[in-house]
Image 1 (spheres, rainbow, N blue to C red):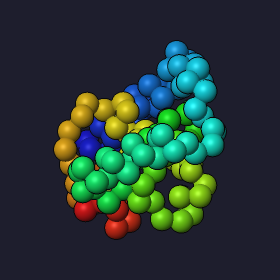
Image 2 (cartoon, rainbow, N blue to C red; image 1 turned 120 degrees about the horizontal axis):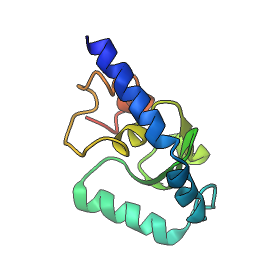
Image 3 (cartoon, rainbow, N blue to C red; image 1 turned 135 degrees about the vertical axis):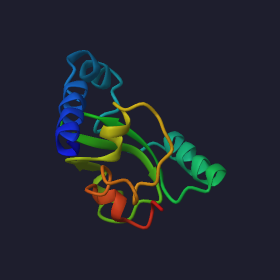
Image 4 (cartoon, rainbow, N blue to C red; image 1 turned 180 degrees about the vertical axis):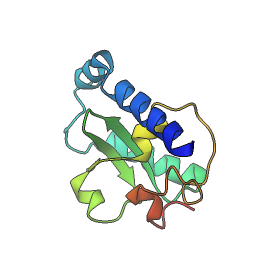
Length: 121
């Protein structure tokens, strides 16, 4: 039963990610694959300071990857590559109603590389 529900969630998530209008809006921002900018970096540092979060970031979710316009607290190689493909928290959270959760305790999130880092309790 759970596998069937997860398959439905995955299909719904992928359809939302692939939505042509959403992808066009991401492209129109002009931010995808753009260089780092101090104004965005100030925001992520401020967010980390105000929330006490070990990692903060501004992400654009493209069709096949997440592009990190800005980040604070990422380790290497993600800090340099500024992109991550596959199943990611950003892909899931951009298509799921907001809720507070512990990524390490959520079976749905456990498959994501970022959930296995020290950045998320």
